[in-house]
Image (cartoon, rainbow, N blue to C red; front, top):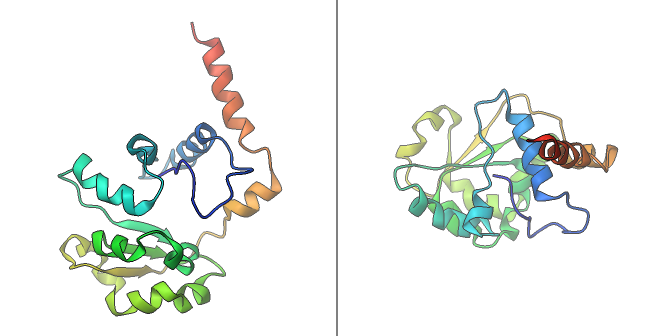
Length: 170
């Protein structure tokens, strides 16, 4: 989900939505995922509101919230975080340098009693909620923060290409 704007981050310096969406599509080109602008379409800014509206939009689908350990470390700062945990199972992907903070976080203190073994992840649709699974595999060391710092104008590649494509269209 490409967010129209993270309420916990400064809007100043954020790349335009179109560039972030194009970047997500490029990154997912060879992966079994599809970036979506559903929060923009639903006009939601907070995950709790998005997750409340999604079942109405997709009544035949079941959802799982996938986030990195960096987000779990500050999950207690999210609007309605306990409600989120009661709405959907949560899967947390290990992120280099965040495990200690994630496991020591106030949210994990509350969620700890709802942790499921990773081997049960394939049955997540049968879990009673709240439910949390900690996914362990070799984490991707890529950091969006580091990538942006190394190339502050990264988004111009996407907005410029999109503008060029429009201007060359018949």
